[in-house]
Image (tube, rainbow, N blue to C red; front, side, top):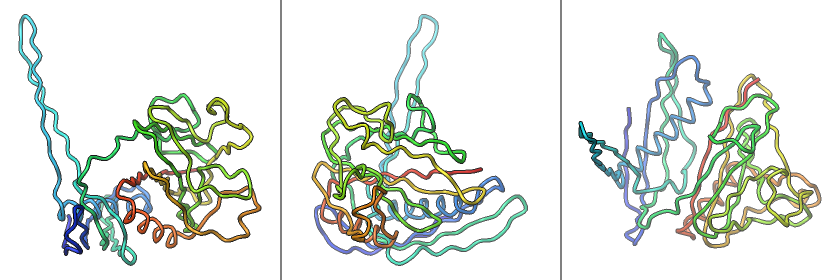
Length: 284
């Protein structure tokens, strides 16, 4: 169930609107409350974007001929014509129980922007334990290693942040922090495949000692965190961090509120900036 309303902020080449969206998720008992909250939030945002700019639906038909038959295949693709730029306030949740599980309803308000030009088709895959993995895996057991495979058809800049839901902090895990200087981004070359957070798959000529590898742990039985990938063809900055983090070889971090404030400003200034999210579940 989705409810949406919106109002236009500005009439520009890329329109921005203030929107409010709601969505109710019927969750089975196998789904954690965190997973249900994230799914309800994502679908509420998607519904709000769709109400503001509508979804492109493209159907393609192909015909296969053989000596004895003719087959017609139909494939349909849908893509949102807008993107979520900024959340206003905090999402509101309502919860209840059903006979076979529970339900979560999320209502969120924010600013969305119309997508005028086609986005860069990035190839992104989170890998679990296996740097040679062929498919993405987002469900981790406590102590398993996380890798990120990334490829872009154009040269650009990339930063990867990790949101820890339990501490409400967001850490910059790429670029690697190798000195007192905290770089805001790393360059990625067109068509080159990268496997980040792996010494084994380090690019030729790179300093392997600077590469940080991550194994994921959870304090509770199950935790859901978020990997946030920020990409642009233009250089971009980062949020200001506390000076005490400069002389420690740990990932710099800021509060989720501060990160979102920086991200919304960065997206409003850089129309080419793309943000990709991956929800990661860790369980004991």
